Length: 135
Image (cartoon, rainbow, N blue to C red; front, side):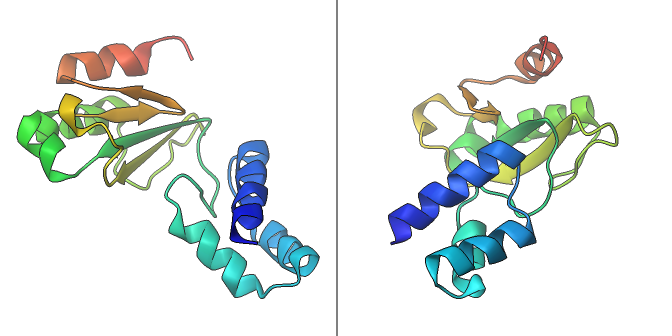
């Protein structure tokens, strides 16, 4: 059941950009499970969101390997370029900035994601290049 629940949540998140409370309750009724269980799964996975996000989501890995490889400068460049703090969405709805634990490619840190695209060996200069590319 959990695999089916995750698949359903993934579909909702992709379709709407987040998982609204009404969708959580609807899914709970359909699957005959408590809404708290659905909410628990939805909030467990960092790639899901229960609040609206921007059109583009920027995720920065804040784990130790990325930090040691120069992550603080990259983090600062993301904040400066987007003019956002982690957890914030731009007023125009274009960007959301999030920090996350390991993205799974520690050997090429610092690492960031924009939407579904992962970037390794990121430098502050590359942040600007990545974030100003046509999107």
